[in-house]
Image (tube, rainbow, N blue to C red; front, top):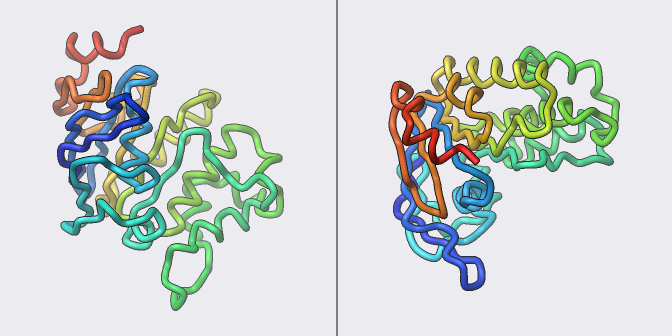
Length: 232
């Protein structure tokens, strides 16, 4: 579904990504791991087109999307839940969800499917509330739901557990597990919370100083090499 090949990116004089490659298949969850400041969010922004790449290629569904702007990638089926959620604080929950459908063709009905409320029941009772009035955990659920209403083929999650209470973390883990089990979507999960990533990921990639230093499948994620790159 997603193939990232030898991506390089610079910030001023800093070489922030160094030949990074990864792939995510349909129906699997790939965990992107690493300490703060190693380039994880930069990589996700390059995948989504928020930041340009200096060298390398991003392919989605077999097509080269390296130079496409974010809205065109979204129209092709890529969805992005950024770190910090970035919901529309002054819009209601319902309006936030409808905004998530803006990438879909105009010919398709703008109707929120009941499945979204089955995944996040709390949102159904809050449709008329402003996004900014929700708790941090509720905002994170809204941000994920806003991405899902576009019915993407790939969802990119940047640290969905950051600053979230344990009960909501369990709800988010349940939703990711259900999406993975459904088998029609690829999931790229950027995470610092090791136990959360280990529970959900089929494979993992570890970044350090802008380059891939370890990768493997679920069985290898507990290895000392992985933990060494994640410990502070």
